[in-house]
Length: 451
Image 1 (cartoon, helix red, strand yellow):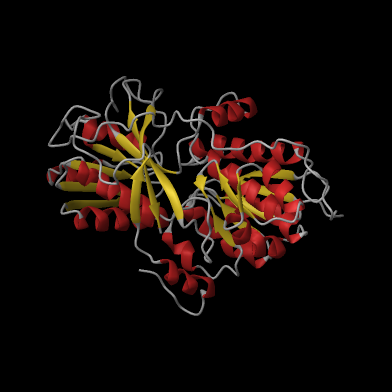
Image 2 (cartoon, helix red, strand yellow):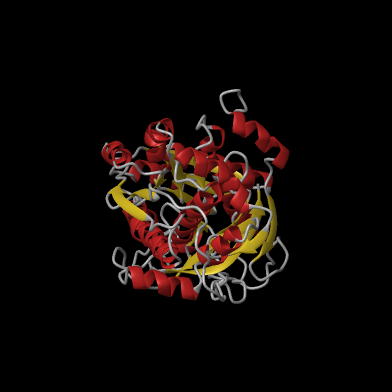
């Protein structure tokens, strides 16, 4: 499953952690195996999912606040920390851009409100990543590196990140994605410079495959984007679903840039699956009407982070009612949403906002710990600030501890953040969401797992 060749020295150490995923608990602290009492939607083709976890998504903020003044840094820098973002404002993942950019900007604001890093304010330069149909990411990366950034936050798409990772890490700059989930990055020869706050799709695939089985599906059909993200997630969903006793009866691929999906839909429906998993980006806007137009109930549809989005302006009311989707990360808490809306009042989605916010905080804290704004120096401290030490959940609280000479363990808005030697989160939440009559989605439960 994982290439542990000499070309990937950090990955070799990952084996000590174990590659298997252990699902531990739901958000409400119950068993890792959801009960069959109640249903979150009307039964269709044997589909009857567990009732929503009580209070899911409504909890109080997990972020602590600093109770006193932040002490000044004992080390100052003549080269203030400068970050770049490579996040989508165009292309098939453009809906993820606003929450990710808001998360970055909120992180920058709070770092600077606390006095900045090494006695200087942090700055950020935003550039569009586009998608794999264009060369925008390469052009944007060249521009960011030309401005002397220490780290690039992005891209959202694993396929896009693959086109620029060698360019970024080869320049001695940190490549830090809040949303890449392809398992391929675990073993990438990245010189210790690639990091992410989103868990590998080994975890999302495990959760989605198990959840469809828990909902009563015995057979599943899949429509899959043929890229690193799509086929990687497909593999892990299939393994989990079949390990749970189910059977994948149809798997149809399409390519980025395709606009016609009737052939894939017809082949999947011909197999008469109990459930259909759509592993796509915004192509779901074209695929869902083809499926529901042939009499398939939305309660049979299972989405993923690439397409769990607000469809209120795209479909007639009720089109998505009862469909469900998974998004890595814990549910965005109410006070965090308010802070994000103060940054961008037009926000409708919050996907990966927490992961983007945490990326800023972790880079800033690692820079403080390294007493340097050089990318390679910061990277050497990222794992250290994520584990062991005293728990803290805001930049102000964490940097105060650091400046007092203490070891820290940052936990963020995306959940617990503990890095492996490969730069991956070793534990994370996967949120499960259900669509309402207006084609927007709400959180219904969380699954926590370790890699």
